[in-house]
Length: 345
Image 1 (tube, rainbow, N blue to C red):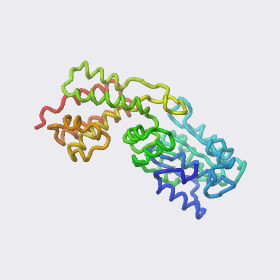
Image 2 (tube, one colour; image 1 turned 90 degrees about the vertical axis):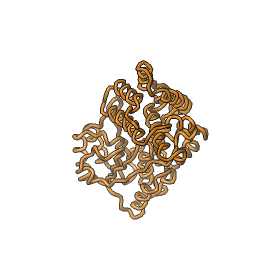
Image 3 (cartoon, helix red, strand yellow; image 1 turned 45 degrees about the horizontal axis):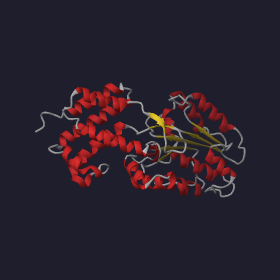
Image 4 (spheres, rainbow, N blue to C red; image 1 turned 180 degrees about the horizontal axis):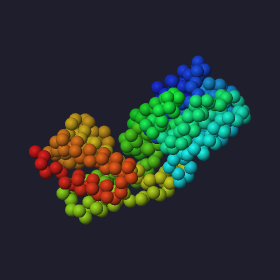
């Protein structure tokens, strides 16, 4: 898990490589970016570079130390994440990390702590963490991984060097899915288009089920405008149904949504409608295989109405993020989409 194995993050890797080259690493880093774009892999690669006794500054990837880092079992590395069933990282976990970092290194001259999902640290945990970054024990290194810096306190942010991780280009996601996860070229291409730059998001999708759901949803949306309430209600129920099951295409057999987020499919469809209205078929990205359907769906559709519809979808997704009732929020969205603005034109 060396830096060389991490794709699509040249700016982030350059920052860390330069710091290693001149031995000017910060004592605390904040890696910020979407989930599934390589933040954790980069943190482990940095740990290998610092702890490897064979190739200091890069890591050899093959020695016992590098293998232990990759497995998360090295005694000088502590990975902290929300506990099972918890949605936050609390002060007790931070205090345990502080104790770990204060101990003498077992095999080298570094103690490294990595906090995953740092955006869910409680205010109390952040206050406790601030003590670590203000007075780092010994030669400790702290790395926070977060999808956003917005939920972290200003004092904490000011004491961490931020390293931003970009969304991966679809071509990079597609390549990784084929080379590292043994997907077919067709599966990888389809999932990469809906990954939104995250290999983690792409891997959360079951290619077969995803393709089937995409086709079903497209058929339903074609008939949505002016549809009776009963049909709208059935579609809403399908969209929010719990369909978690064992993935048949992943080696870890973990529980995953079988088809990913169905609302994401709705969002992509209305984005493509707007692209088609503005740019024609050359602007289409995710529905290039459905151009006749897209042309029919956007016939007579103006930019203002296309924007209104897309805004409705965004608003519904934001409402769900604020813990709105899923069934009611999605049903309301579909009813508004079904009632195409009558005063258009």
